[in-house]
Image 1 (cartoon, rainbow, N blue to C red):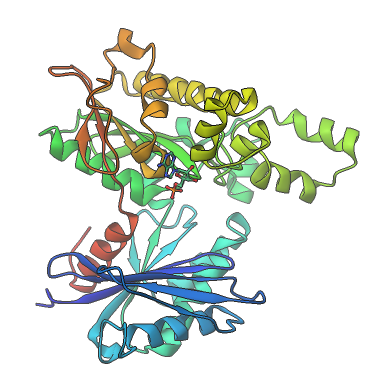
Image 2 (image 1 turned 180 degrees about the horizontal axis):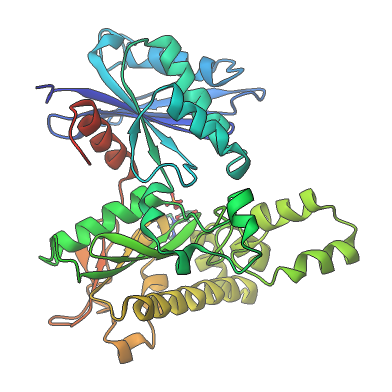
Length: 406
Ligand code: AMP
């Protein structure tokens, strides 16, 4: 029995690496931090403790191996560390962006798993190499310690072909892996399970939830009986609702048209779609919903427009997922915007009362804590459920290390 296991959770991005250490005895977070600007000049790491203490390490990190070694130093730092020796860490859980079609659940890492993650690098060219680098750096620095990969795509693998196929020549699916995969899987899985719990419908195959993960990246999922049947992100996280800087879905003919008119090549065009569009592109000001709200209050019509496009597209997704499931019992809001921006929540369900979906303005005056938002006695429940992707990773890691199924 390893109930007192401490688990390190790693979320490696292309130039960043976030980490948390969990004490699985009570699932408390012992510390968290982030390495920034890995492989770029002036890299640094910030390490934080739950009591508010923190320490910044300003050191060169040339690669993810350097970053992991610095994390280990902080974890054992006599001043702000959380373990005496690294062997107190029982296992490491890694967030991995893309699992392609191979992974329908989290898995213990071995050479075969690493090869499979490598195989789908073309589908996640920025993240998967970073995720692999994080895994390999841990293997090197703590040999023999079990590592678990938790895929952002895994939860969505229950989607039926009618939801995941694009209407392109079929060979692009069989020969080039072109299909919808979906992302934010750990978050949709966590909040949909929480929704079943708070609604007293755990294990009910007919319980239908629409989960709205609204953050810097945003995605929706239709979850029936705990299984994802549709989601809004696609082969990459670019599809779906417009996001902080991503365009979301658009007419694909725009690409050729705009490239012809502006002289942009495909890389520049893709960069615009990923980094300069969405709320930032529409508002011309910011990708952050706090800035957009302030801009709107000050009379900036483009900030107002950006928020209007966002809530309108979201509203259509909620309604279409209810249609996909033949009904809806619960709508969940989560992530940075979903947990903090009551105005966005309220407006996203505006006009959906014909489907029984509504938010009580009084109850909606809440931030970052589990709360029911629908009016007393409503048929369709609306909940705000703070997400915790790191906890999902830690729980899966513990379960797999203990030989339990997840
Ligand atoms: P996430 O990607 O889930 O970390 O969400 C980050 C985003 O949440 C930020 O870019 C903001 O747009 C949004 N956000 C965070 N705090 C607030 C807030 N108090 N009000 C409105 N939006 C917020």
